[in-house]
Image 1 (cartoon, rainbow, N blue to C red):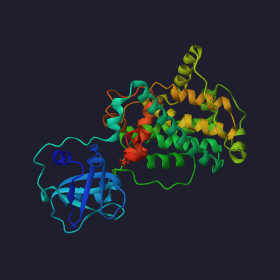
Image 2 (image 1 turned 45 degrees about the vertical axis):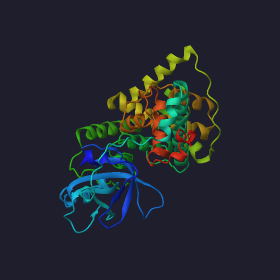
Image 3 (image 1 turned 60 degrees about the horizontal axis):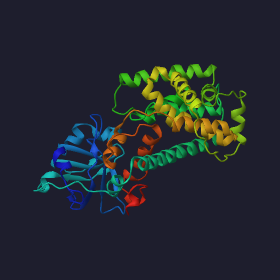
Length: 390
């Protein structure tokens, strides 16, 4: 079924069980063993004015949806099309929220008789015409835009935060974000709620994905480390610890809470060029930041540093008008040697037809930005790469 699905030509009209048709714009990427079979497919349904992106689930029989308990599994709420061979169930499949999922049978139409070439997207016509420096420049620009989005999201959260129990407003916001970061690629909502519980905040604990009674060994290990870090940060502020490493300075205890309540965002200063003497200092500070999260492993530590710690630091810098903190945090981000590869960066390398994955974290985050903003929904007219062709 997967081979037949991925062999369908983009633009093809797929018959639905209710008599309508939907248009296949992009077949998506293979999913993992835990969750839907296909991720990030893009379809156009007659009842929507804009294309819809989401997951695809394959079954031999339509009734297998309920046999496999997908109707009570939150991992399948992203499914936008149920693809089967045999329609043996009278009503459409429904997800956890009761939403009816359109049904398509591959047996309702003949497979293509010839091999179709993959769709040539605008970005795939642009990238070969650029040299390595130009491609790097585009990805760095996209990476900085993603960094800026995360920064301003933290600014908004900080202005709404208040101290609670043994934790400052800064620590509450930062630790909650770090807890959610432990769930990137897994169960973000559960990890975020678990972090809030450890901080003493009232939070509804969502049902873990997969409906298992016990967390997986990986999740169990991360939750154990998170609990240890939170207990450690009760005595020594998480933000104070990380701030001293990022900026190599110390601020007075309690100053951050007052700044959150009364400060205002400023303008980020331009970052100066790194001198040879500062390169080792940057490497040393990254090593010290990794050491804070050493029990999580280098790969997860780097994810937390680039996605949480550094944008949070610049958010604080904007609120406190701390030019040095902003400069040092942005240098650490732009000079970070790189994150581990993931599903999205690999898919985007294929989409943009890159011969290798970018080495620096900023460029890798640029791939993430392009995917989230435009490529996921195939909005090529808004893509910072594709628009060059259009």
